[in-house]
Length: 115
Image 1 (cartoon, rainbow, N blue to C red):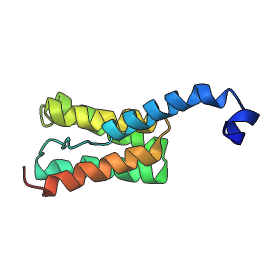
Image 2: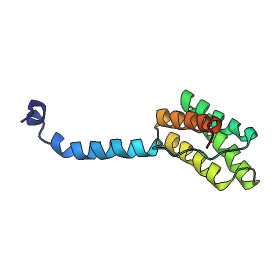
Image 3: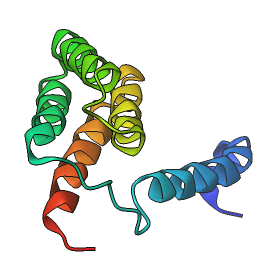
Image 4: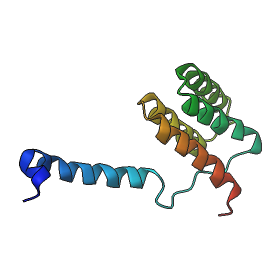
């Protein structure tokens, strides 16, 4: 038996959960999925979300979320684009600032790739 597991037998119970968590994170991080193509002017939203996540600023995050919500209400952001922003916002609100920043960067990078 592995010595580290022998010292902490309950670790064996956590290993399947850890593997599942890693698989879910890998799936959520892309697995080939691309962000929807957006209007050039709307790229400012992903930039604002990246800045908020990079600085770990709740104020910036909430300001960006408010602007995005207003743009959606005005019809300037479509449902797929809004869903992508909402996922980034939810990730940051959940405290995973690093994942939110990576998602915002991936969103912008996907805008330069051809489908």
